[in-house]
Image (cartoon, rainbow, N blue to C red; front, side, top):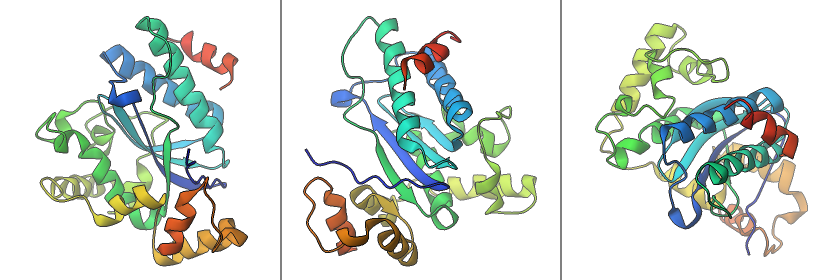
Length: 246
């Protein structure tokens, strides 16, 4: 089976998403969603990740994460395992909850975090769950608008600073930016990133190739097909510690 290209380094930023096995729901109640967010908070505390954006859909979730310690794999193993253990126990089921491994797309945050965050916050609108993004309670959009109580584990200031240096003006500009995306096509760059595993400028992609792919460039790798596409263009104690806080 093809294995997704994984590039990890301190300070890397990612678009991460994971879907339910056979597209089955991964959240059956608000309690489930609250527990997942607790796991995400715990991941922030134990692994030092920075959570910029999240959206919990019925059968999948989206995140924009930054990893100051370059430890995405360890953190995601904890997150998905902790939640699966909880979900299986609560709903009296067994087996895999998620469809294979999570997907992670390395992103050039300074250039693409704005557009990507809009794409994620509009997921419930595109899926026709709600008409407006602020009507969906299980995303970080309310924190960006300033209508939800601040959470220490959620970082909104970076993306908002890309709109304006003044917080209130930034929130207003961001809301207008997201609303302007309703009814419009998903940008080609975001669609393409799902195929290649990287979202960034030509310079960003070239630097990643040079720094991390090295001698693999130009050589076939059946386990990592995204290399060819780019050429074309928890531990149990951690799980239990989260479960005890439910």
